[in-house]
Length: 164
Image (tube, rainbow, N blue to C red; front, side, top):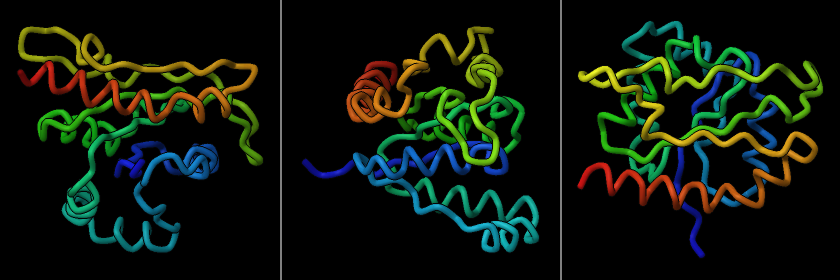
């Protein structure tokens, strides 16, 4: 089966090592990790350059996965990526990654669902239509590895239903 092209949204400074573990699962065709030097170059270009980088990175992606760490919900660029994904009609979902061990930070506290921070015009929260998965704390890596493809498929079907 062909790998589905996806985009990972996450808090770079805190969660890059946890995210790399998920990329290494190899079940999906994730966006290529940006190295620290390249990211600093993009950031020096200001907000417009960051938006352009995100917008370019979203092209041809079948699904957006928000990897939720302890501070992900407060990250402005994660919020932008969530809003862009939704407005572009992209399937999107979240995976809590606090139970993946990071060599620098160990495990962390569970983050707040970032989809609860965004509302539709009628006041309904985005979290009412976007799933978040909380992998088994005793074996988070294998739980993610065994389920991530089906979670992507479910998000794609769910988004198709929402769009009618």
